[in-house]
Length: 144
Figure: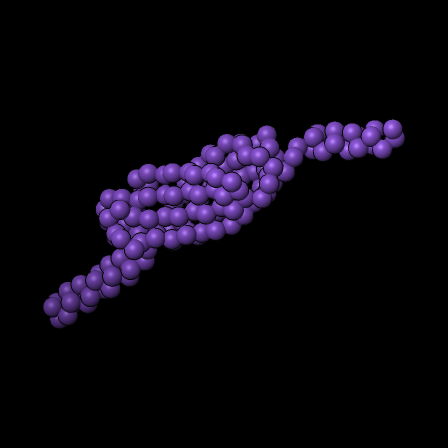
């Protein structure tokens, strides 16, 4: 009877470890803060993910070119088999007016193939005061 209990506990442990090890780092959500940034706002990218083994970022890199923003997050190291929720905030500063494609990529140095990509877009708009000045300028030009 004791042998059966040990076998059952061991089997459940192995199944749990296999399920956890098969689950790669998954990006659950990406949010841009503020939600509707202007040209004077400092923009932050908030990444929410589910990670196996309780890992932490090894390195992050932001590449901004044309109207594309790439955030690459690399994980490394080993931990205990425990799926954890994780959050990372990256400040990318101010951007010019326009629509930007945002691509967030995660990878792991110790587990090849544990990659995930999340794509979205956001728009940077002029400040309300700038729009007001453009409007007043248009009215003045029209009157002349």
